[in-house]
Length: 198
Image (tube, rainbow, N blue to C red; front, side):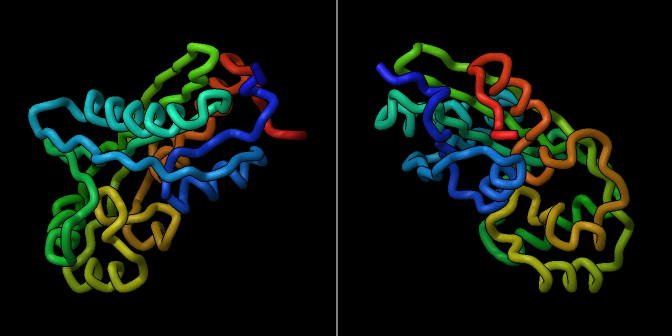
């Protein structure tokens, strides 16, 4: 049986932002988009929801690549007690970003790393506080002309013109982008013996 640490990682995600973060960190990997229906259940806590969805994605891809190390993640935005995922349309996208205006919210990302053949699975979550500037409605609408809000939790992107709307970030910046690289790097090294080529 091959050692998962000796082969390129698999990123179980269709997110270009997560792909970019892994590339920038220097990891060798390929992308396999998981064919799963994400769980949307307002009765569950945001921590449970993100963890279950990350595990769902990781295990779906690991099932067809058992000898590989598979990484999956799920990100949601928490405003008060409400989890914000990806908006359904432009109207909902504007309502989301307007509800975050001038306030602090949390970004939750759960990550699941699976080496199925080795019977190993590691999960962790990272939370980051993000405070938005106080902007007028026309400024918020203008921001949505600069990015594509429909595929982003909370209808904004920290890495795309984030300076227009974000006042400060307390915690992991890469977590807000969609993959907490600091913690992921620690887990890959400590648990699976994987590090990017120096």
